[in-house]
Length: 487
Image (cartoon, rainbow, N blue to C red; front, side, top):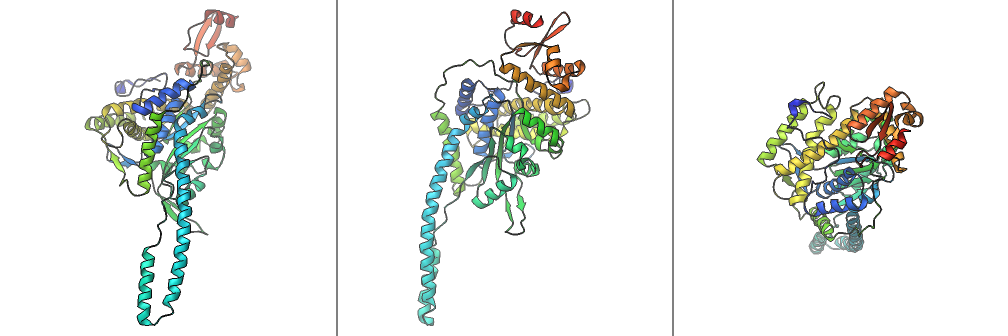
């Protein structure tokens, strides 16, 4: 995607693949380990790392944007990938330790709750007896009994604090809100490595609720039969879904989802498949003490916050140079919404891009430096780089007309199936004959192939009048295969 000359030097260069050199320390090591072990698309690995970071710090810090607005460091991720792209394996790399700690804390809280309920029962029985005693005595004697009752009231056992954080799986908005209220959970992540239930069930019917959670707004739930309540939890979203499910959702509800700004808030990707390029190797132990300690540190801070020991959330601001750069990039994004600009027809996405950049910059800062200090210019530049890569994915998926978008995703799914069969070179006419029915016309197919080539997903060669499509353009050229395909 070419950028207008007015913003060259302001926007980062467009990269063929998602940048992974974003982090430092333990999280950087974990990203490298996950990438080496799974050989999965880089974008999916980056989404896993950032979603884990968002979940761990969202209830500990606020983002103080350069314009003075205070927002949560909450980020929404949607990864679109075929079965076999190792979505579940990536999720395990970043969330196994988090799940272990969640279970440990839940077991501890259940034991404390059982102990509390026993103590409370004993306390209530003692109170009942004291009240009975108060009714027996005259005024002078009653004064002493009332004092005993008063002292007993002050000794009421304290209810242990509830779960500080929780993973939700395929929860509806109503179920999530009810869970937040009943269990006192202040921080959660909606996570699914197979997001069909999210996009086909009730979770996708009230997208405005997820929008409010992304913004950090208070949510009031009014009920007819039970008490109403107001909550203000924080929620990260990390949903991975197969292309066929995403295509169906976009065709049925895509306009609505964009209209209310749900997709604009998400960092979405549909990366090229790595299947067929992954040598089979022995997988080393995926455990990492350094990463586990990193996770434990942040989850311990969440426990402290739930028990009132952590103080108020820290506001993470930006250094002076980072502030100046953020304003430059935010204004450049705004200018590109005009007709002919980079974000023409994507104004919804552009309006949230600078916000997401600020949020990701804070996540990178917390991964690098903990909960203290300001976002540096270097951290902001890394956030700009990765957010613009995801932005390019959004523009590629949504800027075209709905029909072109569906054509693109249909052909991409068909090509991924061929890649799974170790097919590299294929004639364009073969695609016309045996590919998606909607792409039988040569002109229509050519348009989608042009888009794919511009995005670096395919290569194209010509043998006389025969056009050959290369499904693995980054591999060394194989002239023998290419000639055989041209016959």
